[in-house]
Amino acid sequence: MKNLFILLLFVTSLYSQEYYYYKNSKKVQLEKVTSISRTQSVVDYYKNDMGILLGVSDKIILKLKLHDNLDNYIKLYDLHIEKVISENLYLLTVKDKSLTLEIANSLNEKEDVVYAQPDFIKKSLRR
Amino acid sequence: MIKLLLLSILLVFFSACGGSSASGVVETEDNPSTPIENDTQLLSSAEPFYSQQWSINKNEAFYTQNGIDSDAHIHTETLLDTYTGKGVKIAIIDNGLDVYHEDLVGAIVKTYDVQTGGTNVAHTLSDEYHGTAVTGIIGARANAKGIKGVASGAQIIFLKYKESMSDSETVALFAKAEEFGADIISNSWGTYDVSQVVKDKIVDLSVNGRGGKGIVIVFASGNDDRDMGNDESSIPEVIAVGATDKDNLRTYYSNYGVNLDVVAPGGYYLGITTLDDSGSNGGSDTDYLLYDDSNGFIGTSASAPIVSGVIALMLEKNPTLTRVQIEQILHDTSDKIGHVPYRNDRNNYYGYGKINLSTIMLSI
Image (tube, rainbow over all chains, first blue to last red; front, side):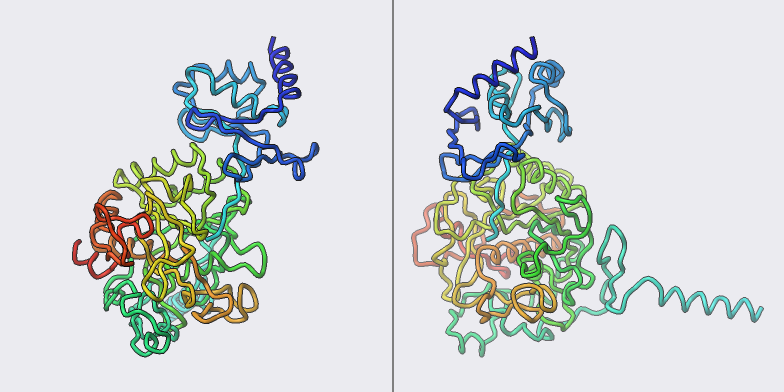
């Protein structure tokens, strides 16, 4: 069942041309930057609607209302707990980075999820 | 008895010599530069470059020579000789630091590199200097070596970030600042796209940190002459700082927006004199970046640490001040400069105006 679910997400991601994530429960469209995203790389790069470059690795940040369903989500999406950041806030690893956005978006639709987002990599601009 | 006396003398002699280097820095694994208090606080005027620190010192000759508006400074008067930020911990998140700089001896109490998890926070590349310049503006010591920081007696925690940093690493840096006991966190950087998890952490520290009084988190608004948008500086609980120039006006590059709190000198034609990495490292061949250097230090990166230093002086005078009270005092006391209308006491390009240390300290 778990493998079937992951396979379904993988197939969806292959055929979907739409990249997005949820921020404050709103969909933010992303454009994949193929010039710097490599299959072998540990990070894929996207530009958001403001033109800001976002790196997406195999890490997801998940904030839950309660931790009751954490184990279920870990099993369902084949996740690994990388770090407990604070109470009900987790840094998780996915098996395949090409599924990071799909899994984060899918988690966002769960009722007990406050938010789920890729652990975005951003440029810290000196001022 | 004589042997015992000789032994005691030898023990005293070795304990006096051991452990500290010639520069007065005690090196430990955790603390690259454990503070040693100066017995006497030197006057600001003893600093060789103090006359050109136009943002905090109105030197008549320097002002006249460089055509600087008479109010371009932050009105420190003699307050920097009275208050030094003693007892206040300021965390600086930036790209690296020369912890062995002569003007930072005794200033640095904790360091952390988010990439390595270690304590070495030296700049990655030899020509980098940003973090040292920012740190100098806040915490350069009163030691007659070069310049004087706004909070020359504050304890500095330096946290080295990565140029490309994940949200979880950013959260980890702020958590470290809290763990190390920071009262203030000074940030001369931004992403223009703060994630929910980072925003949550910043808000949490601002509200619940410092034993419920709130850690004061300062951000530079940015140098792109644009709206701050969804930047870290736009978080309402943050003190967002824009830049002014020698004419006591907003610099053309200073970002603006509804969440801009205050402005402070950041320079344009005239840079902000501060520290460079020592020797041939950094931006110049000397240990200082002077006001007229071709690559002098300008930007909201310079304005934010000035405000962080000022907040340290406020906390030295009254350690019970909450983050909300500090923000309110900054709003209430700032000078309405710029020949622009201020509606409900604020303007999107100047916030609540330019900070004025004298007025601030009188109000506490």
